[in-house]
Amino acid sequence: MIGQLLMDLTPLTPAHVLVLFVVLGGILSGIGLYQPLVDIAGAGATVPLLGFGHALVAGTIEDINSFGFLGIFSGALKATATGIMAAVVFGFFMSVLFNPKGKGG
Image: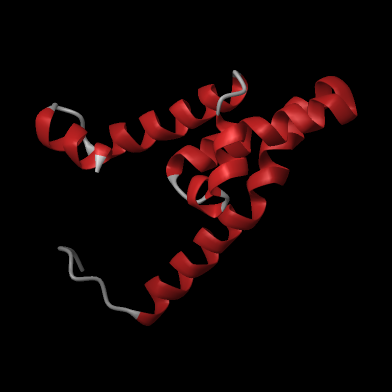
């Protein structure tokens, strides 16, 4: 609802709102405010875009604690690999199975 209001009442595009929510989730996770919400709401807090930002930051922090500086490069990808891979695989299969209705050849 908040995203729709932002798109209706401001000049923000859907891409802007998506990035805003992911970054906001990361910031809230980084300052320790998002994890209590996850503890209460469970999947209701981890599935939305805010949850993706939280997963990126939480994974990075976890790997930094385990591997030091190199955790900066591995944590975010390890924490979100399943979701990213699912999006790629399902996107591929949908593009093969269905004919797009947009313009072009």
